[in-house]
Length: 606
Image 1 (tube, one colour):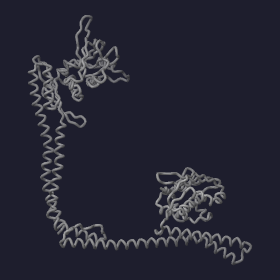
Image 2 (cartoon, rainbow, N blue to C red; image 1 turned 45 degrees about the horizontal axis):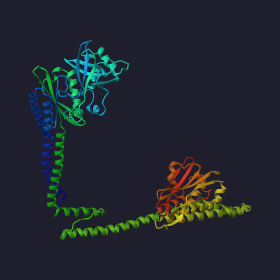
Image 3 (cartoon, one colour; image 1 turned 30 degrees about the vertical axis):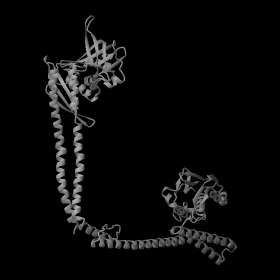
Image 4 (cartoon, helix red, strand yellow; image 1 turned 180 degrees about the vertical axis):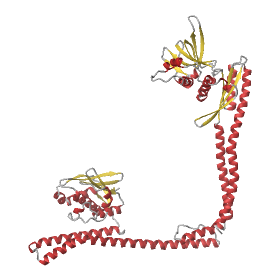
């Protein structure tokens, strides 16, 4: 039984099922979307033509036309309205301002200006603009292609203006460049001088009537559709400035906003007088995209179901014999490479089940013995490394005192300086004390690093330990005339009291050693979460950034020129590091603005 046999059978079944499913999926997602969109557009065209016939039968009755528009929207879920030859809504009899235009001393005429071209209905209903009956206004119209459309309305009393932004954008392009800045009214007046391909007329008048749609009126719903009103305004601008023949036949235009595609339908019709009206409709293609997405989502489940059937079919002919044998083969191969993480999960009571159990038992036994052997070898290596480092460190550190003692003995033996005999004996005694201290520290460090030392924890007050250590080191502090600043908190911690006292002694001794004469040492305690942080900062030179992590190494000394003059073995911080590691707490060192700060944390006693 080869892996290739099972794999080939599985891939063959999977490929066949996925090929059939994929072909259906591609056909429905790609061609279905185009078919669906074309079908909807054709249906809407037919419905618009039907609407056109009913509109012609209505003979211009506003209520009948409004009812046709509402019925069309309910049936097709698509907005539709009728526009006059100037692009104004024919049924908008409730949203306009009527202005009395004075032509002379005794002649005048009335001009009805639709307000939906100047501002949105929702803004009008929310905050009524300052336009009312009796106001004197200046009205500017643009005349082109036998069309005369108001685009700028200025209230003299309120010094307010309203503008058809779509028309104004096209007019403003024709103004010649100038370095001066003009307000909108001045720009409108400039167009009368610079524009030649159409006329800008200015008239004065008085507002006779202002009609605002009722918020609850069904006929006013169309004004709340800002997207449709914007397209109507664009269409009116296009009628005014583009070619006259552009909309002489039925047009279908594409439009997209916020990722949603729309179709615009423009159906021109002529009345008995030869005037051209327009049926204007806008449909969203979002339902088409939603339908296609639903098909895609639906096929995800179909594909998952096909894959499930494929897997079940593959399991049927491979689970009983091929899979268990291949599993055993893989597991034994890993065992041969000393990988014992794999287990054979096979619980049948036949020969394959017995073989699986025996291989698992063999793997567990080998893994147990090899793990124990590796631990023993690793421990032996660690002990060997500790012995080597101990011997290397001791031999290096004992070399200097032994050399000094050998020189003193040689001098005394030769009788060269009999009168300094006491001096040389005292020097040898000091070197013996240093060697004794070094050996004690080395033995203690080796004990911590062996991995066998267990810390005995107990509660105690850390501030009392700090005071005790400071008192013990008072002679060293007074000798260098240092000032100790303590900011302590009376709080109980849970740790090994004797070893923490040793850490504090090493920290403060290190601070005394490297603090210049007459300087300051700061010892502080802070509470962070459930821990107490102890900091010892000494004033003096910084530790180079590259050596900050090396201070915890054995025999490291920050000042090489004074490494033996201060009586330091170079093991204090290494011992402190091992003690704090055994406590499992945070510790560290950092340079401050004018010194160095060592710190460690301990858990509060609960």
